[in-house]
Image 1 (cartoon, one colour):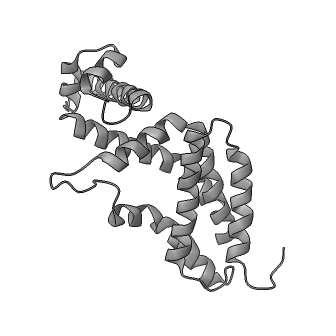
Image 2: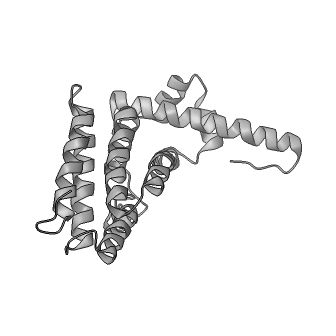
Length: 211
């Protein structure tokens, strides 16, 4: 995106950012309708009511647009989940807030999550490797969850377990719920969230510990 230093330039930058978000939103809708492979820039431009050249002005091709789509959704998710986890008191409540807020975000953004999953599974880098669906990418996502686990163990709130394995188990359960929410229109995300909270609350407690 072009940047300007004058007051008028700042206004143009704001408008350009709004246009970028509009294009990303149209990309999400097109991917949800026809899938990643058929989501051409021409189709996205038609959905947005703009020319293909406008997309090319803001993004360096389809790969750049898809990369920014993923980044934007990760940012939106972090903006929703982060404050709720930070507001929770103690590692156990932080863990439950993490689960609840992740699933609430999925329930409220099904089309975006569906597009994200499609892009993550298909987008490749210059060497043909998955750009986001990699061990390094997963590690970055679960580090905050690992931190909660380790803090809980240091504080004596959690029993002994491998924080990395537990974090992966939780992420797999959340990602599995995302897939079900996309495939099953009547999937009860709230009920699943309550079940997950009970399940991992028990899984992290010391033997014989009760509320």
